[in-house]
Amino acid sequence: MRRVGLLAGLVLAAGALLLFRQAPEPAGPRDRIAATGGTPPERLAAVAFGTSLTARARWPETLKAGLEPCGFQDVSVTVRARPGAGSGEGLDLVGSEGPGPYQLAFVEFAINDADLWDGVSRQESLENTRAILRAIRDRHPGIAVVLVTTNPVAGLQRLKRPRLMAYDDLYLRLAEEEDVSLFDGTARWAGTNRDAALPDGLHPEPTIEAALYTGPLSRLVAAIFGRSCAQ
Image (cartoon, rainbow, N blue to C red; front, side):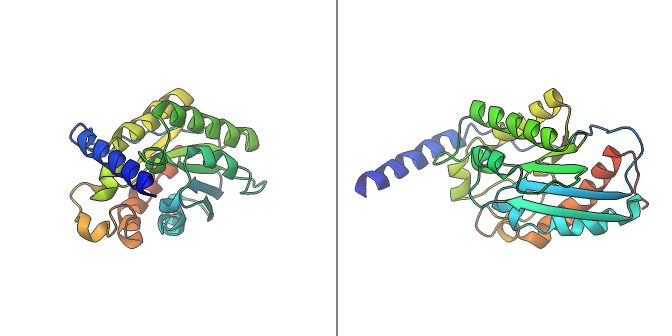
């Protein structure tokens, strides 16, 4: 037990040293839209794969209302997320959503991949996430995929994830290489009161997060399918 505590202390100390080298948060949204082309669907079925951030989030529910003025008659979002999951476990979640048909998938695992204690290397994260994208496409041909970066972290959680921004950058790279869309959730947190929004330093207050994400995410999804949202 003492050795485990010592090892944990060393990991956190290493995180503290790396903290000062952490890349800054993005100055503005780095969204990417990979348009599907063709006739936009009237009914949109989506699935969200991710960590506890997705499991407890309200934005999958508020996205339905956000897309109402964008020309979709009906929107559903199925959440398949697991607390503590990284991209390695994420591949196991693909298939749990059922046969669909689904037109849209969200993918969010960078926050746990970046954990010094039980995460994975950036190379593993890259390879795992690429495998997730391909598995989703194999199961649902023609599906649109959105990689999602999430909130920044604070306090102890920042020490545990000193290179979170570098893992988020992998999503930008994958979006280009795999020609999928990207929603830069991280950038939406600029100027927020982190004490109120991130009470434990990791999990955002769901209502605040939904207010930050719903509008821009709705517009991004609409643009993917060639629609625009009435103001």
